[in-house]
Structures are given as structure tokens and as C-alpha cells.
Image (cartoon, rainbow, N blue to C red; front, side, top):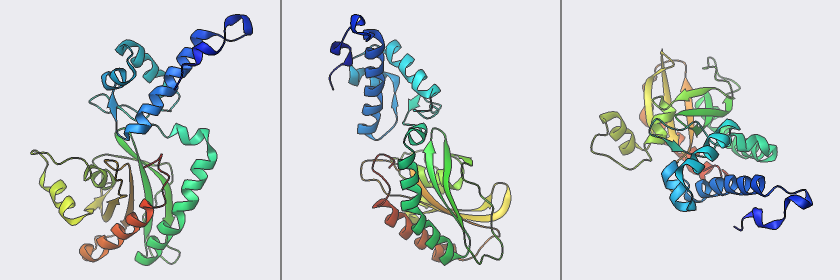
Length: 241
């Protein structure tokens, strides 16, 4: 991508320094979009051939405007959900596209189903659907945030490269193809979550079902959640996955 700073000058009402900063900020977003995974400031600086202090200032500005998610504890940055608010059609299309699958899952299991997106060290619920005839349901609002140690976060961590120090719960989730727990937000209840497959790398999207009580047939319901995740993989916009 050419640098916008060369396209005009102050005499024409065009501030080269502002244009260069804007161009560099856009390039940071492009690098993160192309790699499809979180990067450190140094990794971004190396790709853009810029100094780390310059890149770090760009990152903090983009984070302030929510174009980047909150950096992880080890200093990795990724695209933020603020990009969706800039293009309302993308957010609307994501919700409209995913809604039939999430609703079908909720109705089949008679409970609440949610679509989650990774945002830094949290998972944001961007869509929540409650089964129409559910006798009881876990109330989950859109925009709610859950930590990465939640069931939804566990589903996303399943797609990270395996490590020698992975705990037994993570290894079990990988072997099953879904994550499941009998505790939801400090209550005795069941959550089952599956990552939406992403061929480019670790998943940033998951679908989760929430039951208001502890259920005994997790092994039968888990594959239904996985099936919904596979259906969503062909529907979720590439820039989000």
C-alpha cells in the first residue's frame, strides 16, 4: 500500500504528517487482518519496518478508539470490535447471518444459545437467542463479557497450538471437540461451547448453549453444538473469523 503522505502537501490543505500517521495506522490494521492472529508491537514493527516506539503509539491510539481489542497480558494486539461499530452493516449482517443457526440450536436444545467473539482477554456475546418454549433459561444479554477462563473462552483456547503444560480440562475439550462445564457464572448449571472453525489459525468465534440446571447428557448435546459451529464457519464474515 502506498504512503498517503506523498499525495499532497500543506499548501493544498493536506497535512503530510497527519496523512502519514493515518496511513501507518491503516497498515497496522491491515497487518493484523492479514495474519489473522494477535501480534506484539515488535512483530508489527518488523512487518512494517517501523520503530517499535512509533508502532506502540499507533497501537495505543487504535486501542483508544476501540479499533484494537484490549491487549492480552503478554502484550499481543488484535483487531477490535470497534471496527464493527464503524460499519453497522457488517455488524447487522453478522447478526442476521448467524441468527438462523443460533436460533435453530436454541430451539433444538430448548435453552439459550449465544454467539461469542474474542476481544482481548474476554469473549463478548454479540448475539443471544432464547428458545421460545424454554421452561427455564439462563438470561444472557448481548454485549455481556466473559473471561477467557469461562466455558466460551475454553472453547476458543482449544484451537490454540497444544502445549506441554495444557491442563487436563483443555486436553479433554480438544479430544471431545467441545468444552463443557457444570458451573455457569458461579451457579450450578451447564454450559457447552464449540469454536467456529477457522482454517487460517486459532478461532475467535464460538457458539455456546447455557442450561439453567446441570444436565446429564452432555455427550449427546455437545455434537449438536459442534454441528452449529461448523454451519457458522461458512457464514461468518472472513474479517471476523
